[in-house]
Length: 217
Image (cartoon, one colour):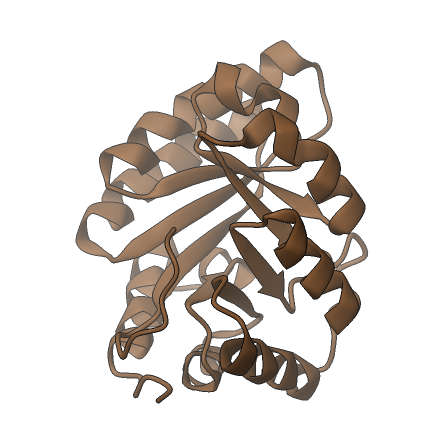
């Protein structure tokens, strides 16, 4: 995931549901069908809290599918197991978690920052060395900022900063406005995994919406 401040379409970033051992094979199958035909930059794997060995094995069961399609596999939290599991990086919630994780991740792995409650939080992460910041993702209770606030934050970031911005779309109709606001990547989670058409069709729909977006000047 490298900086994009040129007139190109943003790319897709996929957030998986929380997946344990029973669901890992099904998730790997869905990704194997969808990823090769889509321009997906990264997949963020969300895992239940369990022992390290179980989490490492889960990551190893997904990583070849994601990386084989040319996407980065990121782990939600748990920077301590990224290297051992063969993942490409970790996504951390807030400046403190990011700062604590970066020594484990740099220089070979991605350190992304989400859970940002203010512009100040985002700037702290940028100064600390985040590879990207994410705006608009749900918190642990499933709550997220108003969509207008997410658009405002993305627009501000795109105008001022070079570090890439990931914007979370809670539904497919949000994909194009977020891209038009200047997001480098648009993240989708429940919008594609809960779609009654199935993940592959929904992810292709999201990617198509990005492909026709007029990039920010």
